[in-house]
Image 1 (tube, rainbow, N blue to C red):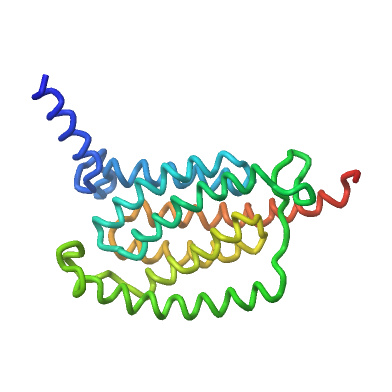
Image 2 (tube, rainbow, N blue to C red; image 1 turned 30 degrees about the vertical axis):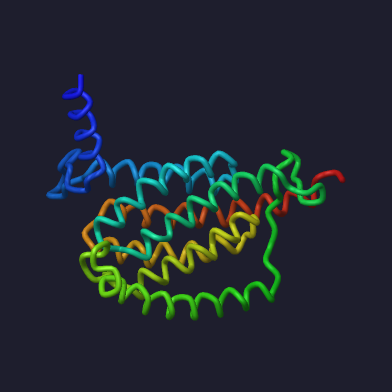
Length: 233
């Protein structure tokens, strides 16, 4: 019995190893971790674009898988970002399901809305300062914590830009602000290039697909916002 349990534990551990191949296609080795991480990410993003509340629990699955993948390819800011995403997926799930009375749509969920000009200005300032500070921090992690981070952070500033902008986009998505999709567009274009260079090309393809879903989400949320004016009070 003990041997059976040990074998199962080893097998499960191997599935979460990026070197464990699920299949091989066009010269590319696809791991279990990358494959299911991508599928859960696509599902969560598509559901978000549809303003569907189930996007949040699906996103939690994606966060757990992505955390372990980014750790193994030394994209440390992206890895740390998943901790934030785990918390915000829970918060977003609750926020969409429990709007205040004046914020509720016909489904009794949070309405979509636009950002105020002051919010846009703060977003630009935070994006610039955050990328600079986090990029410098990420570039030193292997020096400060060599027992945890065995290699230098790859592309610390590009990776930090993704992290900072993703935090901002997630914050505004929780509030159902339409501009969150514009921020996601910047994230997805940057990530598509970065992950391709890092060799996790299915994730790169995922973010390329995200770019199309983001455009759909932006247009769909605007359509939903305009629909409120045609609904009876």
